[in-house]
Image (tube, rainbow, N blue to C red; front, side, top):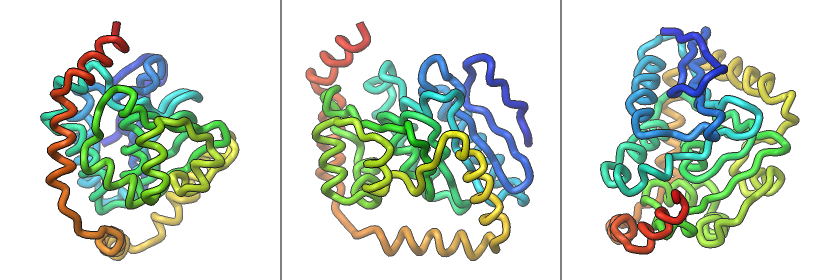
Length: 250
């Protein structure tokens, strides 16, 4: 199942399968490749297609244009649809995908897109990449799965800094804290990704899938997330979030 990539107009996410690689491109460059509610089903369908193709060995997530990988889930939908958990469910699926996953971060990565990147096994950035997590600015307590991924992958200190300050990190700091697996020159990004694809393609897929699952199980300490869940739901209903979103959206 291969879709011709149209990089001239904003569209829902696109899928292109070539050999061992299924490439999913977030394709709204004029809107910083944001993810809209209708994109969730599209992305789920792309994942279905990638998993159904026996030749596919790796899924690559990319963004169209030189500036932004993705600005995350659209602000207009936070209160209306986040309680439905479609976005969180999508990211949980990406995290648990048996295929190796790579985020090709060619620019900025913000908000929920930082969690999408953390769902991937490897994250390749470029020298002008940057990131921030603005949930606190909106008055939003982030959902439990995303906070867990931040702590598991980056550690408590880095996760605390990113969530509580909403500070912007540049590529060198993203690499230092482990958000980026590698940082390369912009012109080297595609070759770096293709090299990784070739490495994955040479491996036995069932062994990779089993070890990916085992690594996640080893890294994940059991915790009671019920209080975190309640604080998240409370923030979605809060007057502070409603007021800040109203201001931000005009």
